Image (cartoon, rainbow, N blue to C red; front, side):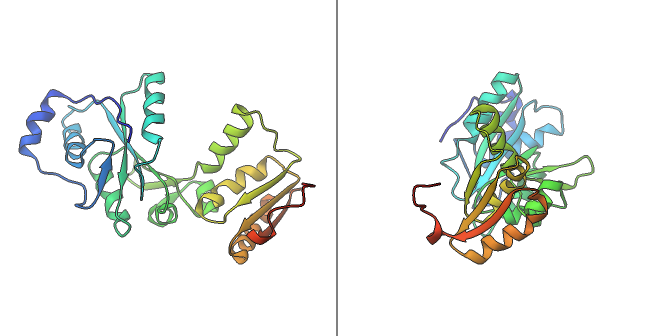
Length: 238
């Protein structure tokens, strides 16, 4: 796991001897950042001692995630003081882990497998793209303290393909594998690029067909369809 630089106020060490605040017992933070230190820093924030915002990605498993490294580089490039850790929540303890993270001062949370649909259910408000996707990969609290869910999967992928890798999607044939929460977040932004065809392939055909029907109103001139994995392979003619 990747561990970025830590900026700890000198008073944290003293507070560490006095406090015993923790995330849920089975929640593990990868990358060398302990749950107790996270809680202490958030606690100290109320007294104006903490100058570093805390963010994290939560999943199970999550130790393989490159998000801490990526966000650490973003922070350095934009001169922001933040710490970004990877939190492995227990499979049956996602809601409790999210609540603990925000109650202790966390600013924002990315959500990865297998919790994206649970995150959607947990959010009290949804952005328009998250509402349509039925899955959430970003959680934050608004000024009123409401938990807001967003989905940046599709926007991030399309931005990377179109602007970074210079891939033209308009008028092309696009095959999407899977029909879970991540794919639900991809379809809207992909369809906005107006490909000629977009086929959703999934092991369970009915699930892919349901997604194709759900996004039909956003398809425009795109021919959106569904198929099973057994239909994927092609004959070499595209």
